[in-house]
Structure formats: structure tokens, C-alpha cells
Length: 319
Ligand code: BTN
Image 1 (cartoon, rainbow, N blue to C red):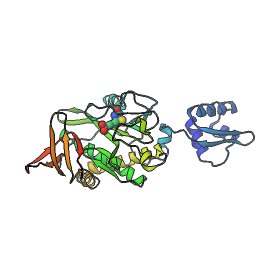
Image 2 (cartoon, rainbow, N blue to C red; image 1 turned 90 degrees about the horizontal axis):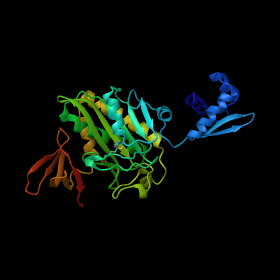
Image 3 (cartoon, rainbow, N blue to C red; image 1 turned 90 degrees about the vertical axis):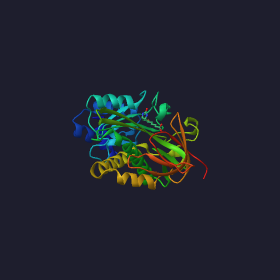
Image 4 (cartoon, rainbow, N blue to C red; image 1 turned 135 degrees about the vertical axis):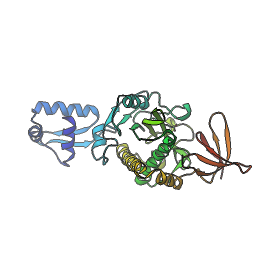
């Protein structure tokens, strides 16, 4: 009911009379007032003027499911949303839903995470209401060897969304960090459930520093707000990310990963650079030459040897 009242209020730039709301939803004046109070409690700014009615002044800066769904142009990605004010990590909740057989495209969002997980055992800082912390459930029929390609696909989708919405040069650092001006704004963590050597489901965790301030960011990280210089509409950004996810995912399912690999290479800030890749045990130094068809990074070492690296953390050396 509350969501429907918001929807009706949004359709008017002027006041909506209590009588109209009452007629539309067949509720009493007292019932309307109760719903309006509840909405105000949630952060909706609704003006009430005697003899005129109600007017929506602004919506809250929250990734509420009804707000994300309103104007989301996808078939299934993001069409079912589990929204939380706070979670330890959205990964755990999405994985649990995957085990229960939740449908593909479902997302879990939290305004804040107390134990946000990063790659290679790191922590993902997740301050309240500042970023996008989301886990997406996908069920591609893939062999395990192709899972890293799904992570590259995710990086392409997010990069595409950021480039579409803002006038910034977002680039991808292998395998899936998104950088602006050399500083990280987004990271992706993929976890999977598999049977024999096939994927049952994937949970793709996306963390984006959106309106995050410097004091909440790790060193070498930045936020979209800091780079663009103004507050970012998180709802719009999330909607476009979901749309791009669906676009690239469907392309991979229909035509394979060539298109994604091509796009990844175009937006890469890794290829052609002198780098060091560290996987926690070993360091590989050399020039990043290419990606192979499994998404591995091909590095030409100083002695001319070429090696393919599967996982790790890239440090870009000075140009
Ligand atoms: C990285 O280390 O770059 C990956 C960071 C992934 C963070 C996201 S935030 C949403 C989801 N929940 C988590 O706990 N981690 C991922």
C-alpha cells in the first residue's frame, strides 16, 4: 500500500488530494495519514497542506526495492531484491538464497556491511548509505574453467554503466578492479557453488565507493563523488548496473565470451604496462601482454618467457 501511494504521488508534480488517495485505494483518511507517517519515518519528505492534500518533495537516499524497481528496464536481473539496512556481508545471504533455490537475477543489497569481504581475504569497507554493496545470483550452465570469465564480464558491465552515466574514464585493472585516475572505485568478488565440474550458481559481489568520503576509504581508493565532484544518485547507478549486467550476461550466454574479452581489453589499464602480480606466495614481474581465452593474464617476463597468471593482485609499475 505504502509503495502504491508513493507511486501515485510520483505521478503528480502538484498536490494529490486525500479524497483521491482514499478513492484509489479504498482507505479511510485516518488510514492515509498512518501510511504518510510511515513513509515520512522511512525518509520520504511529503508535504501535507489542508484542503490541498499531499505532495512528494523528495525520496530518501536509500536503495529501497520499490525505488530501484521503479524504472528498472531488465527482464530478470534485479527484479527480485532482498534489501537490508545492515548485514555482515551480502555474500552470505545471497549464498544462502542460492542454496534454497532462489531464482537467477535475484540481488541482495545492504546499506551497510559490518564484515564486507574483499578478494584475497581482505576487508571491504562498507560505510552506511555511501556505497553500493550488492550480491547478484546467477546460474549459468558453465564449466568451472569459465568462471573467471564471468568475473571479467562483471567488470565490463560495471565499467560500461559508469562510462554511460558519467563523463569519466573508468578503466579495468586485471582481473576486475575498476579505477578512475588510477584509484580504485569498485571491486568484484565471485563465489560459487558447483557440482562435479559444473556451476550450480554464482554469487557475484559488487562493491562500489559511490558517495564515500575520504575518511572512509582505504589508501589508493577513491569514490565516484570525489572524482566527479558531486553527489551521485545511487538508485540510478544501480539500475544502469543491473541493466548492463543483463546485457553482457545475455551476450556471453548467446555468443560466448569473445565480445566481453574484446571490451575488457579496450577498457583495460593493465595491458601494455609493466606490472607485478602477487598471489600471496609468488610474485611475477613483467609486461602485461594479453588475456587468453580463459581470462588469464599473459605476462612477458624479463627473460622473454611468457607465463599465464590465473589469480592475484596487480601492481602497475610507473609508466
Ligand atoms: C575486492 O576485493 O575488490 C572485491 C570487493 C567486493 C565487495 C563486495 S560489497 C558486496 C559484496 N559483499 C561483500 O562482503 N563483498 C562484496
